[in-house]
Amino acid sequence: MSTPSEAVERRLYNALWWAKVQSAGPLEVEPDTPAVAGLTRAATPDGAKVWLVPTMPSGAGHTVLEELGAPPVAVEQPNETARVLAICVTCCWADRSGSAWPGTTGTLVQIRSVYAAMRGRAEQSSDLTLIIGSLRRLHATHWIRWNEKAGEVRLGPRVITWDAGDQAALRDLCRHLPDPPPAVLAEAPAAEPEPDPVLATEEAADE
Amino acid sequence: MSEQHALFDPLLQDLSDRARDEVLAAFSAAQYAAHPVAEVQLAGLRDVTLRRQVQKMLKLIGRTLVHVDGTHWTAGYADDIAEALTAQGWQPLSVVDRAVLVLVLIHSVAIPRSEGILTGDSWKSARPTTVDELRTTRISGEERRLALQRLRAAGLIQLSGDHSGGPSYIPGPQLQRLTPAARRRLQDQLILAAAPASPIAEAIRARNGTATTLDVATSTEPEEGVA
Image (tube, chains in turn red, cyan):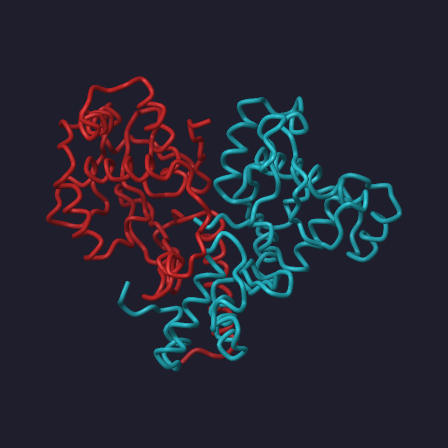
């Protein structure tokens, strides 16, 4: 049994970590960081760090807002952003018999190819601007990890919270999207530098 | 997610199914809606007993209910948590983003307030800050453009409806999440930065029991980007 003061300390510890992930998004921490109630943990692809991602009980979260007619903070270019997220899932979730996390590394070349095929036409010059803007937005919100220098993408820590139902729906979505060409990576994935995990820059390319 | 929730279940398990639904709906609306929600709209906010449960849920994650205009509710960081994180040096916004945000707050709120055009202690304002007013030799045009995009995405600023002189900005809905104490800290910090030698700055320092500190206004606490 914990003493009352230990319980108070534990509550403060939890509250501080929750405030951090709310103000900065999911956080990458050392694996020996003690557990925080309600924050799920997932090892980074290289196993060196652990992501802390907030979870909600069923019946809470963004899904409730629609019923209430109280929209969340708007995403800029929502349709393009959702389309590019779907493409990233297709490119980075190679083995769909298993979980989407941590997935594999995809490339900008693959994303451009699927995007054009999805549109059913050859790539247009404006496509790249829309794609890069969406990738930056998705990186800033931790749906993906976008390495702009290498032109490579991985799924972000927020996909950890996708449950079996979400993943089944996404598997189905992936089946309807054009297949990406094989990924040609710039270098071994192990050498992939992670951009600033705390405050990733959202540099939307849209005006 | 339908499995057990380690943080909230001890609170929720004693509630009836209906009360649980009402509390979770009110909690979600206060936390995630872009704007404060009307008290009349949700039983979880209207009913004092249920609202107390919402407040307890928020306390577990370092947040608190904030009453807006007497009729609406939203959630913001609890003062003790903001203070503890500030003491740790926690700051998710870059210095450029904070500088641009402060410029918007000065032009849209602080100046109109000092002229008596804006009353009260809210950081909501319809007075737009133009791109010209955001120009400074310390921040390049490209840096400013990217900072404006990030601040907009975080709901800390928003485009004003007035497009007559090109794009202009007003404080975003997230500013309404500031608690009364946080609103006062922000005002105090702006006064200390803008007029450090004024009698009112002297009074603020005396009240806080501090020597001369010229912190940038937003270093007082992290702002929420509902990630």
